[in-house]
Length: 102
Image 1 (tube, rainbow, N blue to C red):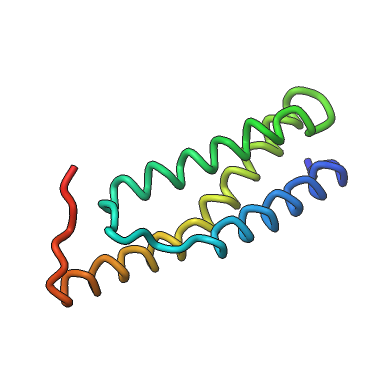
Image 2 (image 1 turned 60 degrees about the vertical axis):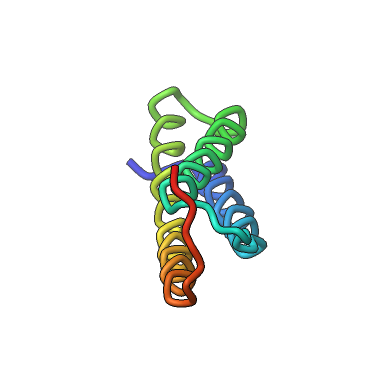
């Protein structure tokens, strides 16, 4: 069963907005541990899901499918950002900058 067009549009909008959020990030100095950044990104995804929860349309099953697809897409968008952050942390290690511990 295909998603309703209104929900597809919301998913697309959410993905664009989330991508803008990721692109605007400047890695902190001093850096935070990778686990903390993963938690932050998970919190962002949950924020977007909760925001769009009130905007999806259709029967409950349709709404749940749309939110599940949105979550999957946001997680997919997060992966390159987190990989970039891991590379940033490795570059800090190579520059003999101590990494913070949790």
